[in-house]
Structure formats: structure tokens, C-alpha cells
Length: 575
Image 1 (tube, rainbow, N blue to C red):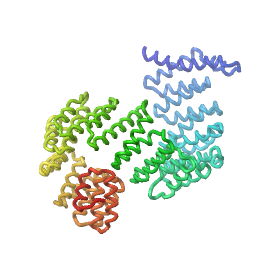
Image 2: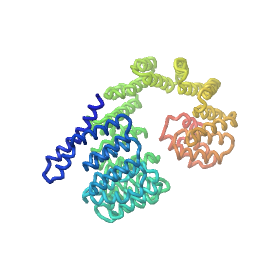
Image 3: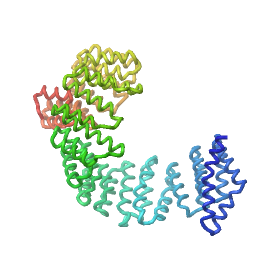
Image 4: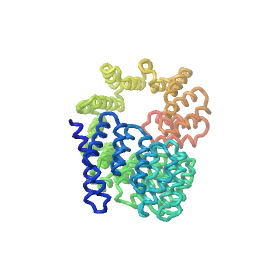
């Protein structure tokens, strides 16, 4: 009986709708709708919903669609469509929306539902006219907003090129109008970008800016297209910012510059933003963290402090996470200055319960920096672990603490004890092998990695780690290449494995091939370890200026990289 009561509750909404319609006016139409809900129709609707609930959606759909035709009620047409869609009966859903459109040809709700269904079913040939009709029925003041939302509706369409053409045709009448032109060209640009037509997308962004020189959506589109192959995208962004320096666009521009390994340019944009909009909190946070990364401690402290002033009482989860980042940054600044008491005070201000393990780990690091390793380990061990995932997090935090402070034997033993408890955890075996390598115990490392690939043959990290170790020690190079190529079979696009391959080629004397592989890997992922290898190959190839540039970029990404530090020491270089 419970399911019947639930169904009756569902039916109360249409009944309420009928009642409201009957009392809304006296034009006769509403009275017809209300009188249609007789006992027979009520039973038909109940039976239809029972069929749906009992696993026979086809029968339920038929009853619901028949009821919709009898009553001409849009809610029932919509329900019939929903039942068909949920049962993956695309043709039945189409039949329902066509019946709805035939019964109510002027209904915008019917048109919108039909449009959504056509998109879901990839029936693009029917979409253009519906989209144009929907836009024509939209008040002029609302059209730009509707147009801007169009690309989202096509994200799951498979034929993106045809979708781009359909949207372009549907927007033809809106391209040259002041009220809608910029939005229409941006929508076309996004459709072209989804279709892989980046040059056409950028051209559309330029046309949008031609209509509205300060259109921020056009600037955001151009930012998405910024790449070495699109040199005109960045000037377009700059031109919009000159006319309309919105914080969202400048902030997005700074992030794109950071992703492109241009920290100096990103800093400039963030500094401009903090001057233009001193109350815009995200700029202060990003600026402070970037300055900290550049080891500019004084300005970093000022920027992070300013962020906390601008956002004193965070309310959303995102603001609380950002505040945690600011406190952690300020704690790190104090730690770098060896003011451990102040570093601890900043940590004490973090209140988000979800950050407790981060706080505990940072406190443990502070204790270790002061030579209080036992207390540091006890602090982590005392962190309450409610789930197996928490226990693993706690374990890895302690292992990381030991590794970072040179306690490799203790880290190795800790991992070994954990493996005895959970021999099925392959990640622990891999981590123990890496610690063994750091200890210089290459025999143990090889034994552990070979045991790992025997237990899990598709664990490509193990093949790569062993092959790289051989290459780095300049031994068994043929076997190293074989192992690394095996890893690439599982992860052909992994930049770190490509780096290993480049390194073994360099060790084998194939300098030109190594350079090509390493340049590709570094472009895909500008990691400091890859920078170390690429810089060395460039250096020995006589391209010393390029090597210094790469090493300098690597230092910005990770000044604590052991590979990069050792490389610079060996070449006696301070880029």
C-alpha cells in the first residue's frame, strides 16, 4: 500500500493544477480542463503510474499519453515524455512531444522540451528551427542571456561540427544586432571551439569584440584559446581589458599565464588587479601565494594579510578553503624565517575540521624542523583515524615526515610493517621501493618492484621506476629502455615516463632523440625533474642559454627538486 500512497501524492500536483486553473478565470478553457478529471480519468492516471512503478513503463506511458491527449494538459504531456526518457524509449518520447506540439503549437514549454529531447537524441536536423523559434519568442531584453547558454546544451552532442553549423544558422538573425550580436558571436565561437575549429572560434571572438569592445565573455573565450598556435588570442584579451578591466577576466588571464609558465606576467596582472579592485579578495590570495613561491616573503606576507582583511568572516566552503590556504601560507613564511612560534599561531587559526590532517602534518613538520622528531611522529600517530582511508592518510603523513627529514630507514621499516598488515596494497610496496632507492639499497628496490609487477602486471609506475633507476645509474641501458617502453604501453602520454625514455636515450648517446623526447615531455608537463634532464641535454649540446632558461623555470616550479639541485651543483650553475 505504501507505493499507492506515494503515487497518489504524485498525482496531487496535477489535481492541484486543475483546481487552480478552474478558479483562475472564467474563459471556459480552464473549466474544460477541470471537468476532465473524472473518476475514469483518475483511475487511468493511477493505473498508468502503477504500471511505471511496477516495471512496465511502456504500458504506463501509453495510458499517460492518452490522458494527456484527452485533457490537453501540459503536465501530463511532460510526464509521458519523462517516463519514455527514463525507460530509454527515444521514439516514444518523440511521439509524446510531437503530440504535445500538435495539440499546443504555441506552447513554449512544449518547444523547449522538444528542443532538449532532440539534443539528447542527437536529432540535430530538427534543432535549428526550434532554437530559432524559441529565440524569436524570447523578449529582446532576455535574448542575450538565452544565447549565452546555448553552447552548454550542445556539450553532449556527438557531431560537434554539425552542431556548430546548426547554431550558426539559428543565430543568423541575431549576429548584427547591437543587443545580441556579441553574445551570438561568442556562442558561435564556443561551438566552433567544441568542434575543434580554434581559428574559427577566435575569429568569432574578434567579431564579438567588434560589436562590443568590452565584452568579457569574448575575452574569456579568447583566454580558453590562448596557445602558441593562436598568437592573436592574447592581444584580444588585452584589448578587452583596456576597455573593461573586469576582475573576473583579469584573474582568469593571470591563471592562464601561470599555466603557461609565465609567472612574471601573472604577477603583473595580479598587481594591476589589486590596484584596480583592492577589495577583490581572490587576487590578494593568488598574488600572495605566487610571491611566496617566488620566495618574496615580505610582499607575500602583506598580500596574504590583505586577503584576510578583505575576507574576515568566510561563509562558503570555497571561502573557508581559501582562508586555510592563506593561514598555511603565512605559517610557511614564518617557518622560513625560523619563527616557529608564529608559524604555530597561524596554524591555530585554521578552524575547518576537514583540514585537521593538514594542520597536524604542518605542526609535525615544525617540530621536526626544531629537532623534535619523536614528538612530531607522536603528534601524527595521535591523529584520530575513523576509517581505513584515514588510517592510510595518517600512515603516509608519517612516512612523508620521515622522508623529508632524512629518516629513510625509519620510513622503510614503517612501510614494511604496513605491508605486512595489508599485502594487497600495491601503493605501499611501490613507496617502499622508492624509499629503498633513496637509501641506496638498489637490490631491495629492484626486488620490491619486480614483486610488484609480478603481483600487478599493469602497474606501469613500477616498470618506469626500475627503468629510470637503471638509466640514472647508467647501467643495463637496454633493459632500462625495455622497461620504460613497457610502461609506455600502459600510459603512452605520461610526460614523466616520456622523461625516463628521453633520459635513457641520452645515457645511450642518442642526444638528438633525447632532446626531442624531453622537449615534448617538458611542454606537456613543466616539471622540475624534467627541466633538470632537458637542461642537461641542452647544455651538453652547446645550447647553454636555453639550458639556463629551462633550469630557471624549473626552479620556479620546484626549488626543492633533488634532481634539479644535484644537476645544478654538478654543472656549478646558478641560473
